[in-house]
Each structure stands twice: as C-alpha cells, then as structure tokens.
Image 1 (cartoon, one colour):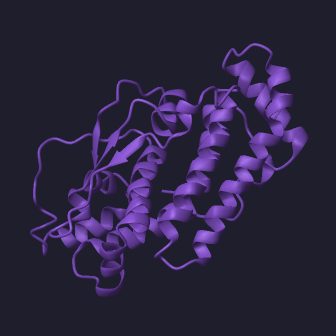
Image 2 (cartoon, one colour; image 1 turned 45 degrees about the vertical axis):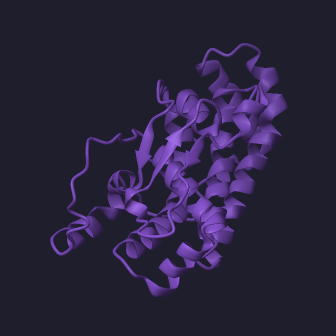
Length: 247
C-alpha cells in the first residue's frame, strides 16, 4: 500500500528534467533518435501530466456524482504521458484514441454493479497501454468483472473481509474470472465503467448515491477516494521503476 503524498509528479514539471528523462527512457528502450524524440515530446509529456492531475484535483473537490468522469479522464491523460515515455510516436493512428473497452447495456431492474462486466476491444487506449507499458498481450475480447477487479485493490480488502460474513451476495462464487496484473489497468476498467454509468445510467447512479439500497455503495465510494488519491502515486512509481530512472 502507498502512503499518500502531495504532488508526487512535481519533479517532472520541468522542460530540462522532462527532456533528460525522456531521452534516457528512449535509450533504455532501444528507441532510435532518442534525443530528437525527447526534444519533440517533452512539452507534450508535461502537459499530459498536468492535465491529468488537474482532472484528479478537481475530482477531489467535486461531488461523488461526477467523480467517476473526472477521475477517468485524469487517469487517461496520465497514462498518455506514460505512453509517451515508451512510444514516442503515440498516437500513431486514430485507432488508439478510443477508450478500448465496451460496457454492457444496463438493465433497468435487478442491476448489480458487482456482476457487471466490460469487454476489452481490439483497438484503443486500454489495450495499447497494456501492451506498451506492461507487455500484456492477447487480451482482446476478455471480459472483466467489476467485483473481481475491486477485490484486487489492496485498500479494499478490509471492506470485503468485513462484509463477507454478513452478506450472502458478496459470498456468491462465480465461474473463474480474469484478473489484471497492474493496478492502473484495474483502475482504468473500473473508472471507465463507472464513468459510463454516471453519464448514461443516471437514474440507477443517483438511486445508488441517494438511496444507498445495497452493498455496493461503500465499495464504490471508497474505490473512488482511493483511485483519485493513489493514481498519481502509481503513475510516479511506473515512471520511476519501469523506465529505470530516478526523479
């Protein structure tokens, strides 16, 4: 688990620092013309980081009703900054600009977020950053279950433990489900689905927030708090360790 701190990405908000960091990253990844690419991308790298953090800071100050949308776009921009460090030509085509996931059409009755799924698409940001940043391949068509993803977040383990004995719903066992090796991938899939719900399934979303009818509300609320605060730390950890440089 991480100890939260303020502005973990601040050291990258410098043109000479960003240029040097990118050049080192490109050389580490055996990318030719590393110096030129670093020069071309340093401002774009900084702006993606800044824009992503602005979304997340706004999410901290906003009502929970709009937090999923702000947090999702904040994470998306931070991931784009990370992609620039390993893919200097990103985006090379319009295909990688899509979200890369699709959500099921929500049922108006008896809908449970824990049982919902998103599906990995052939093209888009999700599959692109999974391959470029984490070397995860062959995930097209994979269905990702929301409860399975939430259970992989360390800070939610106590929630599941506390609710496990008293909630038959939480103890239901399903068929074998896919897990993801990176928390950033988990956050992206969860925030994507929550942002789609907040935008297009407003009735169910506000019933959840105002009436709190089931077991899912505390998990969703806690996840949003965790993701908003922890995302910059995960991004900084990726930049520091995956690219073999030390801010």
